[in-house]
Image (cartoon, rainbow, N blue to C red; front, side, top):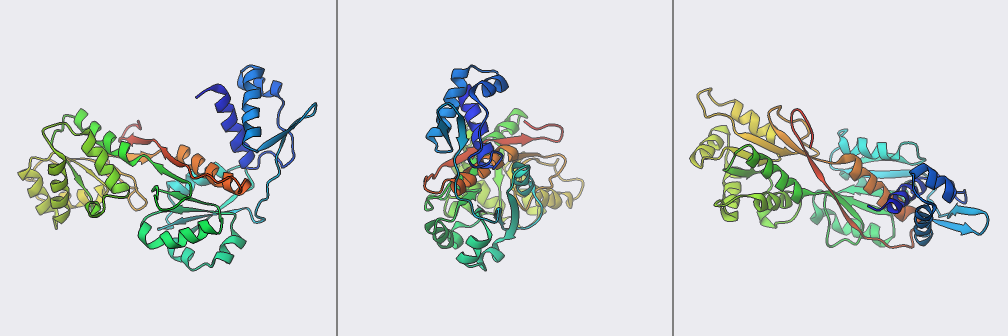
Length: 339
């Protein structure tokens, strides 16, 4: 990223977060150049981009000032999640809002659907919605978007909904998991989940599976990988699971349910085969992993910054329609380090 773009992004986010007051002045070109160690030409280019984005205005001989945008009086942002358990998403989003006038309130999906549109618009400046099952919530979210309530979707890019969305890179996460296991000399790698993603081939689990298949080395084929996933899901207990793994010489699993799998396999007699190597994905309901497994985790700080910026852009400048789909890199975390 060019230096002027970095400066632009830093100043843009600070403006959206309210760190510069409406009609208040920004630092001069000289001050920005000194702070970021760049030329005045680079600083001026960053400020010009802010003018083009309608976030600031310039007065000849006086300086650069923050454009005053209408803001909903209660500076409350609503985060809607399937579970209210304190998780990394909440922590990262609160950290992104730290030092600003904005406050994050968390609500369950059930409670959210009990609120009327008037109640939502009266109480909240915008909504962050963690999308789990699109089919049940799409009409409601479409109503919110149609009424211009600022809205950002997390976890999925819904093709049928014209609102900004921010997700962790599920496809790259599946690829990274498979490559990690291949690096450890595993060549019979299967994908195990309780989600029947093959019914629609949509959603995060399907994308993770596609990434895993893309990283597979021959001769294992996509058809074999899908059949393994379907058969493994049908296993009722640890005995059936271990039997299937042995029969097909599977030595490693990519999964979203490592805790359940580890518990099942631990209950087997000690004479059973050596434990399978696991890589799992951190989800809202599975954040405590077996110490021997590796985990694909979202880059929470980067993801939360993108989410907050997308929402505040709508709140501060509602007439500029933006429907960006942002994908943030996922990371591999082992027992000793994160990559």
